[in-house]
Image (cartoon, rainbow, N blue to C red; front, side, top):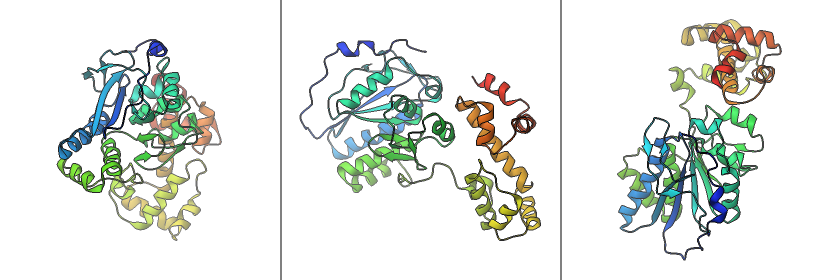
Length: 335
């Protein structure tokens, strides 16, 4: 469901006074239509368990939507909320929880409302694709943030002023978690900051979490696990390929990375990946192109250049051979 004019009444609502310190940290979770349910649950459960472990209310939270109406999450479940999003007290924390639809659609009035909260001293954060709402409001310009790896390239093209980290979450001025279960790691680190690492470890154990990831933890599994191989030379080559999609390496440069001949490199790829180095490289570049076409407003020519193609016609031919559709036609379908 899409709500029109979500927060126009906000200016008419009296802002709560700053609350006296009671040892309770207050969080408000703003759910946007199509939000990721796992991210919300992963953020709430560590706080619930921390309260139980401490025997007191160290954390309090409420769930809101832009209008106060129930919100549907990405997998279709409808979630009731406590109330409509309104002004928060100084020192509260507002977390925007988004999903796939958030990357494509802006809710009217939301950016202005988020800027007002930030100006009043409310700490802001985002889970999953809620990061798009903060970026559209200009609240991530010059800030470090975590963006889901599958959307990071398109996000960077759309919001060039934002510093995108490679980690799973960020504990900077704006709290951001790339999505899914990593929201629990973000909350566990906040618990550690406020109450010490022993409580965070206790909460993780009670949630049966196998360790707590750091903000620098990679979002994706390693190249070795992804492709089911451990050859160190091949791993080195694949990492270099991933880092050079816009300006592709030559066959000789690829071979030089592994201190091998071109022929030896071809045999290495044939043995482990059942293809040639250049075919595998082209597949990586076309996958990037697919992401940019579906996630950004970049022209086909701009996408071609960003993926190492000097000729738009060559790019179109390669893309159609891989996906059975032209770049322009795929964009129409994706839109």
